[in-house]
Image (cartoon, rainbow, N blue to C red; front, side):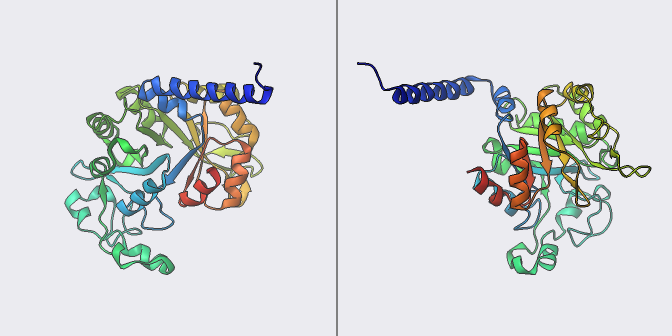
Length: 311
């Protein structure tokens, strides 16, 4: 008996989907991670930091429970060589301490309250449970979530954190985060990424960029560190130079209310084997707009909002 064309088409699509899923499952974990980057990624910026104190265990647990693709954290190094998850170079905004984070030992940082500031800054979301929140070590994060999560880690201010790359790669290897396809490393500093690459060439890297108007000509965009020309002038060769060591680009979308990248930028990057992840998008309308433009992932403080659009 000949099958109805619609039934045949549905069977073929089901077979193709099953075959693709099987092929993906048979890949090595690192290869599977890189393949999955071609799909849209929900990146929880410092965890669910729009709801609870950033980079805290509460922020990570909330985002992980929602099923995000990546937990995003900034990594810095203490004066006694311990890796911690903290964004700012100075600890005064997000703790009750003062001074540079790398001027303090881990014990000194652990004694700080990194949660009460959130209650003061966001009284509508205040919770007494946030008081006394401790800074996290990277080991603590890995011990909590292990290989059940993926991590999007930034080598933060490497010029202020000597030895950061070596300590980070050693920690990733110790926890088997690289070959298991569990981690991406991002940085604005190309030299930092190249150092990571030299230490372990299998670590997938993301080159962060920040575009803004030139001081000399505000009609012309430039990139903060000069790693690429501005989007109007960028070429395939410029993208290829990044693709030589990185799997993607993390970029801003808006600078002082003005759009700095467009769908052509995203398309050109993709054509040169680079995924495009945009930071930090918190409003639903901008999320939808960027998804329509073809971005491969978004950093957000509100992963619950983004997950509703993806689902």
